[in-house]
Image (cartoon, rainbow, N blue to C red; front, side, top):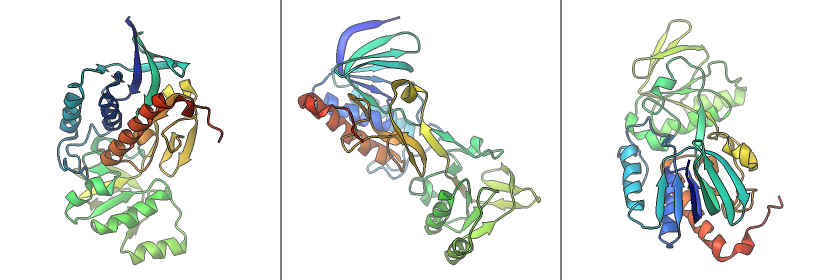
Length: 307
């Protein structure tokens, strides 16, 4: 076990796109930054990342590796490949402990922990998640080349998803027992050209072929669904940060300065905002980094939330 005597200005928990974007602002302010990352990027299953200006279409692993190399060129950056178990302490005196017992001290904490995707229990879906089954049309819709798109319903948000995707191809909304459509909603979908399929799904085969319970096979260029999300791991519960409900699921409650309900602990990225994409995560992280830096210059801004 290792316990460092050095107290970092900032400890960033989570080294994916949001966490690294925040860390970049902070090391450029010549502050001591520790990034702790377990290496589980949410989009690790995807082969290409789209919609991020200047890096459209590249392998997301390459994007992450390049960002890390650039960060590590700054002398005040430390990177630890660990999984965090516990955060304790208070403003200016936090201790972060890893699952292997290593611990570090820091003045401020940034949670860039990402989210867990709770996928619908459809046989064959999880194996295609990120390659032929997606959640974001802006990230993956264009590459389907106007082909047939299936939307696997999970909750009312799926109706909006089906309507939105009509700009990317011909859409079939696969109800799969998840929704009861009111007549006005059904008419609105049909007006947009959405085909409504009531039969339940038995399994997904091939690239994106949906086999229904009655034996029919519907072939799609790609599938979309809207998994429910919540912050990754159990760290949020351990710290006691407040959560809030969104159409996507649960997320960390933050204010306009990226502060959580716990003084001195900030949050950014998918775990603290929606909707989700690489570009939005990077923007969220960059803004959070600036707010963290400001909190050291104006410590009076660190106070308990009143809402």
